[in-house]
Picture 1 (tube, rainbow, N blue to C red):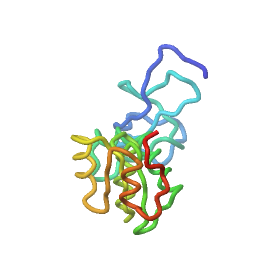
Picture 2: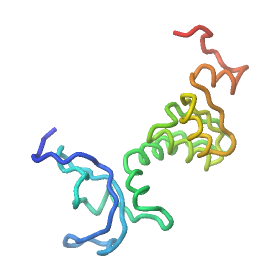
Picture 3: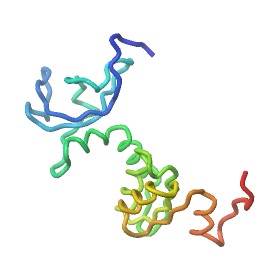
Picture 4: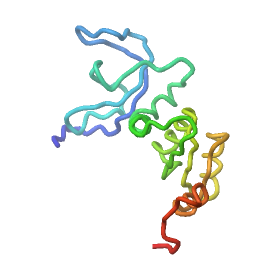
Amino acid sequence: MEHRFPLVVGMDFAGTVEALGAGVDGFAIGDAVYGVAMKPYLGGGALAEYVTVNAAYGVTRIPEGLDVRDAGALGLAGTAALNSLDTVSPEQGETVLVSGATGGAGALAVQLAAARGARVIATVRPGEETAFVTSAVKNGLAMSSTMTAITREAHPRNCRAPSARM
């Protein structure tokens, strides 16, 4: 991959449209936006005062009620969580296992799956991480520090995982 110096890291961004390129439709100066700075090279990141992005992809308006700071954290993790759930397409009452439920994509996947009515199984470490996940989802949540334990608890008759740790 091509590197363009000086390298600016980061891909997620949120802010206000300050200027528009020729022929840009759908956005106006002053719009609150967020997204992912996607470039075909490394170095055009989003950890900067100003970011240029293609208006055709990787940017959208911040929904009403969503804070700019929170929107800025949704780019890559939010896209990964949403794409994963869209691929699995859980229906009301189906069970979804989210491994790494306290990471960026995992934490969002837990909330999105629960909002779709799925029963969520989340693997987390005991302690503060458990409290974080349980505060995000009020019902339909099972948790454990090991995937084997949580799977056996949720589906005791259908679990064929080995009983010994590997």
